[in-house]
Image (cartoon, rainbow, N blue to C red; front, side, top):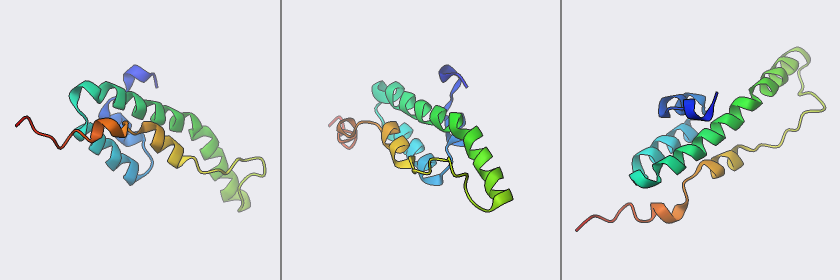
Length: 102
């Protein structure tokens, strides 16, 4: 999917874990408007990485279903934390969200 085709709903559906989906919604709701495009770009990048890995994931699932083990040549490092970190808004901007206009 092209980067410009993402919507918040499509990003939400593309994320595999409820925690990441919840984080996306939290980021969208709590990020200042002017920072929102950068935050959404980060989530779109993360979703694109996950989508590009889908064929490998499906092949590994099929292999495991037939043989009972993951393929020998499959890298099994969990990169979920890396993807979520890369999608996070920068913490410096989030510290200001509790301050009102008064």
